[in-house]
Structures are given as C-alpha cells and as structure tokens.
Image (cartoon, rainbow, N blue to C red):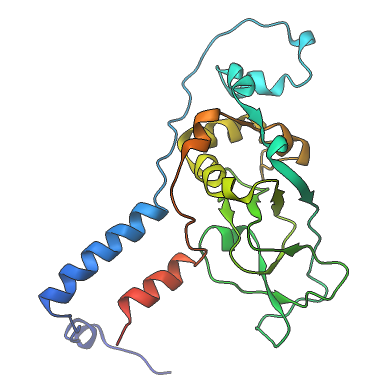
Length: 236
C-alpha cells in the first residue's frame, strides 16, 4: 500500500502566488465571505411569562420566544406568493451524474452552497420544476438558506418553491429570511426536535415587515461556495 513519510510531507514545497496576486485575492475572498457569512441571532435567555394558553391556537410559540408579538409584525409571506408548489421525491428516477436532458435537483445542501450531486429528467410527472425567479426556502433545519432561482431545476421535498406575484421582491424577501430577524421568526415556527421543519401553513403566515422590502441589493449568484472558491483560486 502506497504511503507518504512524515518528513517527506513536511519538506514538500507549497507553491505561492506573487504578492500582487495575493492582494488581489484578498479583496475577492472578502467579497465572497461578506455574501456568505450570516450573523447568528443570540439564543434567548430564560424568561418568565404568564399567559392563558386556552386563547392561542398554537401555544408552542409561547414556549419558543419571549416576543410572540413578532408574529403580528408585517404582512404574511403568503400574500406575496401566487403559488406554493408541493415538492415530490425524485429518489426513484434520479441519476448521480448530469446526463443530456436532465436538470439539477436542488435540496437543502445545494441551497447551503454545496455542489449538485443529483439530477433528474424534467419530463417526469412526479417532479416539481423550479423556474428562474422562484423563491426557494429550506423546509428543514434551523436556517432558511433562501435564494432566488436563476436557472431551471428540480425541487427536492426538503425545500419550498414559492412562485411570487412580483418577482422583483424576491431578493428582498430572501435577504430578510436569511438575516438575523428572519432567523428569529423562523425559529418560532420550527417543529420537531431531531429534524426541525416548517409546515406549508407556517410559510404562508410567516410575517414580513414592511421595511424588509426596502432592500435594494442584487440577487446573489446561485453558485455553490465550493464552486466560487474553485473559480477564484484556480484560474491558471
């Protein structure tokens, strides 16, 4: 079995780019970090409150946050949505490599920046198609990983596909859902201990404050972090 000795490994030369190139990369990498880094909302400390749980249809929210009034702060996300498409499993007919006529399967890991690992034929009646401009949101996990689709794809059951009434609002909605305040509100709706998830009804009632729509940034490229770094660091 082939092996490498420790002294040989430590003596191995590591090629370094010229200083000018390093300085150029610093700016590019800082830009990528700024787009991918999300500040986390600090966890809530212990709180005490009295409430008549008989007057609420979902008393679990009272246990999730000391600020249940946030649920009334803003317009329901459902009012921005023309259609919320149900996602179906592609496991029975997907392939592990890209073939002619197939589309990438977008799951939670892809929303989180990892490379595509599954492809499926869009002609199947069992697939949920993603079209450019759709708002994609993670159904499972503590993070939204919200993004605006920029190319056709197939949806995994782990994500919600929202077709917006006004696609120009997509970047603002994604920016808010990925931000600290959006994560705080998402935490109120999460259900389940092992794999926390959201229901369709929770997405429909998710409150979006008016100031969230004032965001005027561009749509973030839907290229995985690994691919972005590959393109920047290996240009030769």
